[in-house]
Image 1: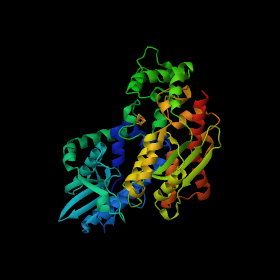
Image 2: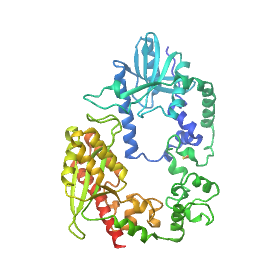
Image 3: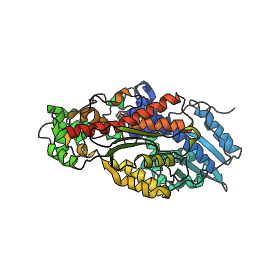
Image 4: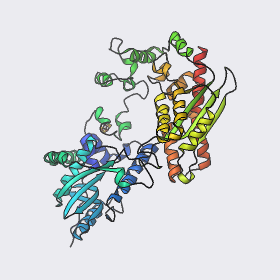
Length: 497
Ligand code: SF4
C-alpha cells in the first residue's frame, strides 16, 4: 500500500517569509485574517509571473505537468512527481518534492543524458539576492528526496531581447547556473528549517518590532497590522530623502513629524517639511518663482503619457519591460487667457495592435504649432520620445524635436520654491495639485493614478478585461486629461503669485 504523504509544515514561500521575519511566518500560518488586501497591481504582478512560468516551459517542450488540482493538495503533486520520475519522464513541470515536512515545487525538472537539471523561472532581468536562498532550499529538498542534481539554474528575462516576429523563448530567456552559489548554503539550511519549525510550534505571536526587514527583500503582507501605530500622514517615515533618519527617530520613540525636536539634525528641505507640519508654514520663494516664470512663454502645450510595461514584448521592435505609450493627453494654449484646446489619444485595444506609430503620428500632428511642451517630471516623457527615435528611425527627426521642446513643471516644487504642509515632503503631481488647486481632485475619478490606468489597459489589450469597456475607456481618458489640466491650473496659480 502506498504511504500517505503528511501535509507539509513549511513551503518554499513560507520558508522565505520566515527568513525575512518570524512574526510574518507565524501570522501567515495562524492569523491570515490580518493580511493586507491584495491590490490590482499586485494581482497583475502575480498573474504575469504565472504566465512567464508557463512560457518558459516552451524551452523544454513536451513535459508532463505535476501542478496539483487543488492548491491545498500539494502532496498529490509530490506523489505524481515521484510516479513521473519512476515512469521515465524526462521533463516535469511544477515538479514537487517534500523532505522533512518542507515542500518545494520546482518550475522545470529536466533529465538530459541520464542526469537531472533543475530550472527555477523568475520574471526579473537578473539573478537577485533572495533567489539564491530560494534555490538553495529547493536544491536541499530535491537532493534529499533522492534526486541527484547535475546543475540548478535560474531562468530569467533577457532584457536585450528585441522582438522580431513570434516570441523566441530561447532569446527571451537567459539560463544562469546558480549551483556554485547555492552549494555553500546547504550546510545552513537544516538549521534554518529547525528554527522556523520552532517558530510555528510557539503558542504566541513572536515579538518583533517593525524595521527595515518589513520591506526587504519583499514588502511584507502584514504591514497594515504591524505598522498601525505609525500615523498615516505626517509620519517620520515620510521624511524626504531620509537616509536612515526615520529609523533613528523611530528608535527614539518619535513617530510623528511634529514631535521631531527643533535641534534634531535635518537638511534644509527636511526642516521645511517638518516645520510645515509643526507650524502649518507654507513656504513661497517668490523671487525663485519669478526667475522660473521668466522662462515661461506662450504658446505652450501641457502633455502627459500613459504607458504599459509588458514583461514579454507584445510587438516587434520592443524589448522586455519597455514602457510602451498607449495614451496621451495634450492641452494647448496659444496666448494668455486664450481658449484652452484639448487633444487626446487612446489606442484601440481590440486586435492588440502596436499603439506606438498611430500615437506618434497624431502627437507630431497635434504639436506642430510652435511652443514649449510642459510635462511633469521630464525624464519619463523624454525617455519615451528618445525611444520613439531609436525604434522608429522614420520618425527620428520629429521625435527628437519634440523631446527638445519638453520643459519640466516639477522644478519649482522639486526645488521647494513653493511648499505647503499638504505636500507632505513630496513634489509629485498627486500631492502638488490638491495643495495648489484644491477645487480640482483625482478623488472624483474612477481611475486615480497611472498604475491603475496601466493595469487596466494591459488587461484590455491582453483580452483579460471583464468590465464595461466603453465606460472604462472614458475613465482612462478622463484620468489622463486631468493630469494635463492639472498642469494648466498649477501654471496659472504660479503666474498669479
Ligand atoms: S510587517 Fe514587519 S514586523 Fe510585521 S510581520 Fe511583516 S516583516 Fe514582520
